[in-house]
Each structure stands twice: as C-alpha cells, then as structure tokens.
Image (tube, rainbow, N blue to C red; front, side, top):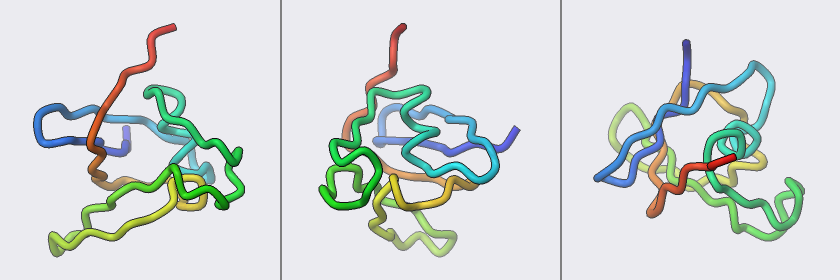
Length: 82
C-alpha cells in the first residue's frame, strides 16, 4: 500500500492516502494535524518539508499539495487517538 512516510529523525509513521486527496487530509486521518484555514491555503500553518529524491527539501502547504508516495519531515509527530 502506498503511503506518506512522516519522520522527525526519531520517529517514523507511514500514512496511507487515497488517490486525489490532499496531503493534509491523509495526515489528519492518522496524526494530530491542524489546518486553521480549513484547507484554503491562507494561514500557512500546515507547512511540510518534502524530501526530494536528490535529498533536497521543498516546503509545501499540505492542504494544497496532492498526496503521493513521498517522505516528509515534521518537527513533532503526534498520533491521533480516537
């Protein structure tokens, strides 16, 4: 199953995603991840650091970035507990 690998250097979580959804939606299913602007891309609070194949990092807004198989860095990973 494809997934988004989320790491902070100490922890790693694989987040599944569905075709066509934004990264923030997938992250919110598994992690405590907020989008105060409700996915409109106006607040900038959902910034993620996407690790590119060449090792470089690209800063993106998770609410505007399509989910795909990738690795992202987040400083803190908080699992959602229902």
